[in-house]
Image (cartoon, rainbow, N blue to C red; front, side, top):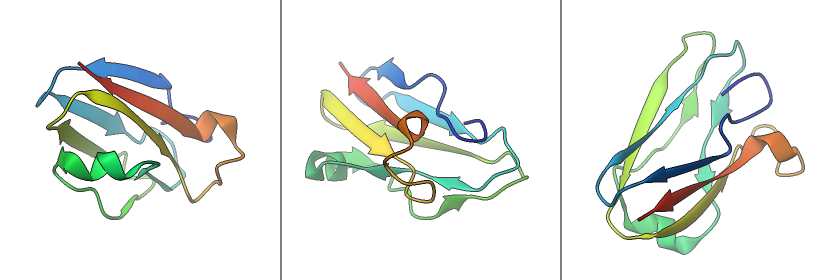
Length: 88
């Protein structure tokens, strides 16, 4: 994550492989998944990526699919603060 974007915005991982987010900005962000299917994920993220600690979070997905996410702190209208994890 940068100040107002996820980079890359899309990431492909395998089932039960970790997708990792790292906050490399001085801004607090969070990750909220758009669909109920994301609840099948292993390892629930609850909270914010506090800045400027450059904290990270990883999440494993138990089922194949496409999981859209966004940062609620900066609103869904900010296109850079949306992304997708594709699990194959």
